[in-house]
Image (cartoon, rainbow, N blue to C red; front, side, top):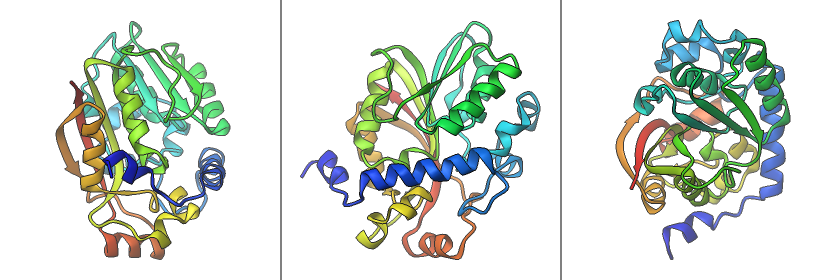
Length: 263
């Protein structure tokens, strides 16, 4: 069986998964002070490595709903005038930080399937005058952008939520220009998760059940025509609930960030 076939052979109910992910991340947008399996907000962002000075230059409400799992913008090395695609842009924190890097001559495209997240991100961007940022409805498995039109694809804690990760990476590769960069943070595991976890849509929505074993994750990226140049772990990231912490200990669930270059 090919890498793609293995990764697509999941028993999770995809409709239920989408509904649970949308519901959870609607709450992340609308009620960021609520109880979640994961941390959120500025304290998390700074602990992961985000620059406090840059955070001061974007709307605080976008940071309040930040639910990322790592820091990768240093790996992305976004330059003025570039076009950046943020897969699963959420309430817009990474998109707005990317906008600071591309400047007025660049473009940032946020893509998210959750209405509440997009609406919040759009409102915050407009109010703060980030005209180079636009947010689009859609799925990370099928970004509605032209082949070779993107300089940098970024994503934070979102690919693990997809039930078709090979397609996510293949589409990221498709939209990237030759030599373009994929820079992301995500959740992976040291040992493969059992079906009792990987077929549970609630645990997928909590960024646990959909986590791939790290070797399979790397193989899916390479199979999409992307060469991994940097791979690092973020031990400072942690889950909050007992069940999530138990899975972390049992299966080696952990946060990573990486940089990959399109061949």
